[in-house]
Image (cartoon, rainbow, N blue to C red; front, top):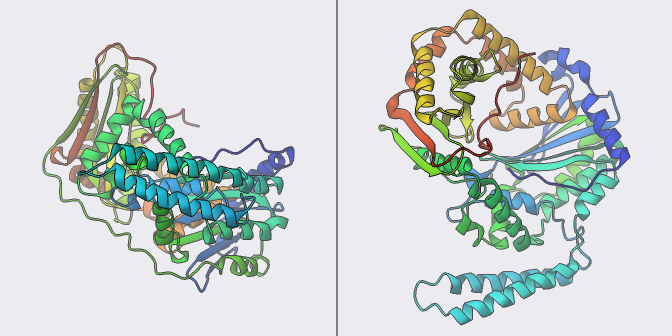
Length: 523
């Protein structure tokens, strides 16, 4: 998941950040009916959905742009492209980030022509001329260097921060790409201009230099991390036929092949108004904000919503297994296929996650870590690696010195069997329902949190109110539901396992990016 890193913010911006987080603290006590009165939803003529939540405690606002396209939409042979475009969205526009766009564009166009010729010659199976490949590579890299003289680095970020913006960031997951930050309310029109412009006229500026950055990110996060390499192979084995089998950061060869033209094509296909939702939360009114939003975001061209359907995985009927041998900390992970987030039992998997893994009173922590003392960390969790398509409910554990992944597997299976054969306690189920409500209310306390939730639920369900209806579904979960879902899901034939066997003494403990952090002490 990429994180945009910007320069140190000013004292003014720091103060704004504090105000943004504190704004609207009393909203947690509000119910759906009172929140409905503050929410306005408008679909622009081009298909863009905009939500506005009025919170007048402080003169600030936050936004969350949700693009319903993530690494699952990466084209075949171009893995990592969704993540790559996210990086490009911070590089500016024809008006921002350049000293002379007309001249720069000529060089950028020449870069693409030379690069296409270079890749064609480089990847020839028959008749490859090494000298010609070297000449084309040299010419392409010279053009890349030439384009650098027009670049004004980080100008987009500088404009945002100089106008009081804080929290400038974005992320790409398997299912979506999101953009967000907060600003003073008197900069609303500047925000609308900047945000709409980077989705109206993005420029693939410094593309190949940024691609090098992503390659280094992959080397640091995956290639040099034994557990991450195992998890990558584990997911590839579990998702043989589906979009979740490809790593979001991209395969190494793809990261050395796809082009700026490919990234722009991805943008054209998926960054369309009908595939985007923007939520605004703060000291705004519909009469003030909506005309500004429509003025700028209405410029985005109308296009049909992209088809994001994916090949369904055939039912798994045999145990699949990945074993890696490394000079590293041992590790064990296993996963079970489950339906997507729209399935009626989705909330039941949330309950199972909570009962198994939420805090030191959870079953996995209490059994493997506290009582048996065979694991330094252990958890079961849903949503791996995404939720939009059928995915995995996974279990993982890290052994303590002197213990093995096989011991962890046995202990995990004992907890699974207990879940399948013995009803959870009334206390466990009640604790989950209480925490689910508390977690939701906490997430709405800040402007950024509220914006994220509104945009996410509006995109995923077509109605932001599902955020609150989710609590009703949680309340209806029974002990019998948990038994039924556990029996149907956690079967040997539905299992994919991954084991990291240490060939030497374990080094420093590292955790996979896909797994949750170890549980914290209960409040």
